[in-house]
Structures are given as C-alpha cells and as structure tokens.
Image (cartoon, rainbow, N blue to C red):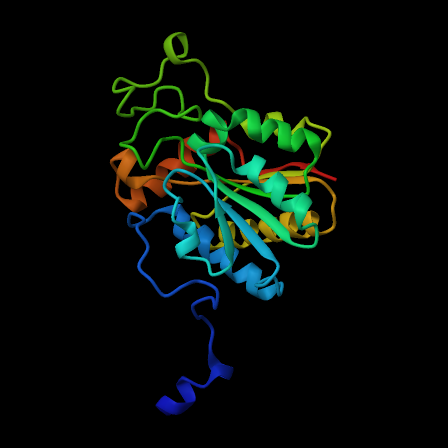
Length: 253
C-alpha cells in the first residue's frame, strides 16, 4: 500500500474530532477529563449540534472546557452550572444545553442548585465527573471521597465519625420526579468508553426531546491527587470506586 493510499480518508479508522480544538490541554497525564471531552466533541459533531449546543463550564479542573470543545459556552460560578443552564434552556429552548461538572462543583457547593434543577425537570443534560477528590486545589477530601481514602485533608483516610459518609448524589437524583435518565459510567477501558458515549448521547437526545433532566455520572480517576500512575489509578478506580459507585443505569424513563 502506498503512502497516498494509507492517508486516503476512506481508510481512516481514527481521527481527531472536528470540534476538539487543536490545543494542549492543562489536564494531567491519564486524566479522565480528556477522554470525556473527546466523547462530547464527537457526539456534538455526529449529532449536528455544533451551532445548537451551549455548554456550561464549572469551577474545578474542567474550568477551561470552553478552550477545548469548539461550541458556545458559559462559565458559571462555583456550583451554579445547573442554575445557569436553567436560564439558557428556558431562553433558548431549541438549543441543547448541558453542564460539565466535577464532584466538588456538583456535589458540594452546588448540591442545592443540582437537586433543585433536577427536581424541576429542567431540559438539560448534566455530565458529572466523579473522581472522589478536589483535583484542582491540591487533592483535598471531597463529598465523594471513599471511606479510608487518603487525601490532603484526610491524610489518615476518611473517617465516618469525623467526615461522614461519601455522598452518592446520583442515587439521590434518581429519586426525583424531574429526572428522566440517571446513569453511572466510566472511561477506563475501550468498552467503558463506548458505553459512556452511548449514555451521553441519550442524555443529549432527552434534553432535545424535552423529557426532563438527564444525569450522566462518569466515575473517573485523578492520578495526581491519588498519588498514582495513570495505570495504577485506573486499576484502583475499578477495584474500589465501582464498589461504592456501581456502574449502570439508575433510572431510564
């Protein structure tokens, strides 16, 4: 096969998503955010939503998401992405409005905004990255940190008597009448990536169909915050995180 044949578009099996900007991200090696960004960029292109999608970026590791996925974005105050998305969805009902949030943003300072937007059944998709730690600010304990997990602010491990239990917010959201789809996925293997992509696509479709609020939790890793290599973080996540945060659909209506 000649070089010309090799680079023929008909023979292409992998390429950069058109809506994923050609810049270096600020994410650490092995970070789950990069994989999820690629999924979102692929879907927005494949679904023809380039000019109809509006993302709401969080405060946290993904604060610069608007630099990486080439659609319209609004930057929200810490934890307020669902409130901002509510306004965007109501003012522009023909657009796809989605939030992209970490566990510190969604399940800590933004708990109230998240629960009430979902309870109202706002026609938005929420992408929730749960890596059980505050990754951007130094690796502090998050509401989702596991029992016994060591962080900068729980150096001997999270204790129930001192810190309470890990907050399983997706299970709470699944109980609300306003949510139509709540699922928990991961991106640590090719098979998991395919399932996560299908879940996010369904969330986008639900928002466009005005079915209510969809939540896609991605159980991710934080190799820097966890003090592990990317491979070790993937293994630790699969062994420990999925025990407390089991993968699969929690609600699908």
